[in-house]
Image 1 (cartoon, helix red, strand yellow):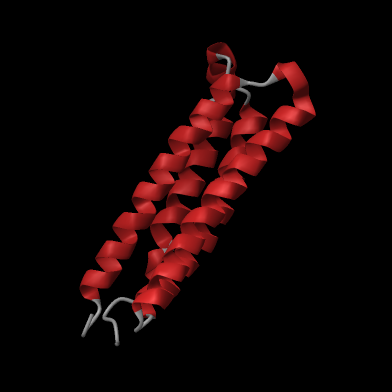
Image 2: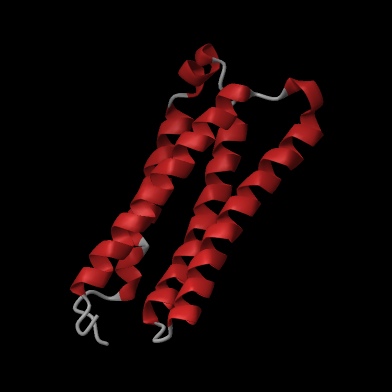
Length: 135
């Protein structure tokens, strides 16, 4: 199963989104403050989402290479569950650390980022799978 597109290209859209998002978060610090969104919480949340998206993307990539259905499903569900549980744990740790001072705006912004990262991840995988030979 060779590919016209190297597997490294899977990660490029995720990295680009991470860099652009962080640049915007740093550049829009005063505007975020006016909207009630904590910049540091949002940047840390974006970093967590970036790392967990890269990890799940690696698992999805391995799943696409599996010949057996069971191995494919195991890798796919593992990637999905790891991403979900790490994000839930990050929110719980944050909520426990700050108590009642939870910044809901930052959490909702990170939820939006979660959906964007997931969209980019799936789109990249589908594009990569389409370009693979004998897939």
